[in-house]
Image (cartoon, rainbow over all chains, first blue to last red):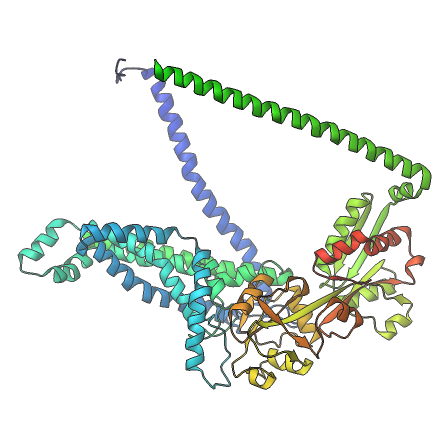
Length: 311
Length: 307
């Protein structure tokens, strides 16, 4: 067998053709994403806006009664919006410190043996389908929460008992679900901090912990912010897991109340809804879509700022 | 050399096996084909024979036109399923259904703008006085369930209403142990929720702590939560939950038909005058509903056949 040889002069007649064809194929692929985003945005706007005007923008966004089937229906989703904001914020508050610490552990502190144990665990966590998190929430978290609820509200006649399906359960599940995203992206950011920064800090007499908190984490700031924002996106868009653990009644987002998120509001009522009710569900989708767009835009501007500082 | 021999042996062996398998399959498929053709032939013979002798079969094929049904939104699932199966049986008949509410349906059949008025309640006397006939085609029953360890056995109508509107929130007043009640229901738009709230006159007054989006989810949540109460259609009941008596009556099909179980309602397909006075299409539809096949259809959408 003769090894194959390549010549830079070989086949140069067909070369320009291949180059052009590849260029066209890449362009088409690139436009698929643009086309998808554009058509989804357009569709959400077309199907989400009619109800806004039929019911009234203020009545939908700031109304507090959700009774889509009543004789005089109420389509207020204020509590639903608040639940999504509060729930996501709490999940970030719990999940991000844990995630960033885990990333620091993996990137800076852990002995190789432990890294080999922790990293696959994190990667597996990312691969678990969200419905499994929900099932775990139902089987483990909800009974625990119910015991806690019974203790805290023992003898209360005004509290409505939820059987553990409450905001805290949903927040804990969400916090667990954003962990892999936060850990992976923060770890990459920490690892990409140039070694000479660490060396300089250590040479100046800084301890390892001082180096991590005063040099490495500040240097990896923009990457960690990306991790937080992507985690937020994941949390606000999650539906399946929290629809199983949150109870899905429309209430003020207090810790032991059964609550409904923007996502679960759509999921739980889409199947039987009709007419204006269905249109309002699309409007909820539009609100969710707007939230995610805002998060993405803020991510981009933050990244640009972070990048400018780094240079 | 030795290796090659082994290879050849293995390949020959595999080939023989594969051929055997193929041959087996071939002969089998030939057999099924043969039997298929014979059955279809027999069926064809049957139908022609039936057609020529009784003439009834021929009449079935002759049905043409449309049936219009107007009425209850709760009956949508049943009416749609009925329409689909009926139109499959009689391809030249179209069944049109509108779902605007029981009262509107009965009014439509009364003034002749619809053949059938769907109603998920009994007819009122003044409606019957207009010559509208109440044909009960199915019965919708709802069971009230709690977790299997709950000590409560029986609820009265008022107790049930008080649980669901938030007045009562502990089982100790209802024959159970001292534990809070976790009120579980379905999402708005669900037919079971609509029926439950209508029967108890609690439309949009229920205070649910959990609004779950499927019957299965209600069963699972009630089974796993001490002190939970929920409602489901009768056909899904099993041992994981405890079914409560209402006014000392078990939700059995017999009790529901006898009318002693209050959490049930008739599905009425009202006609103007007796069924026998209707056109051929409508008569065929009712014949179908009351046939064994129709009863199976009624059961398949979670209802109890009326007769």
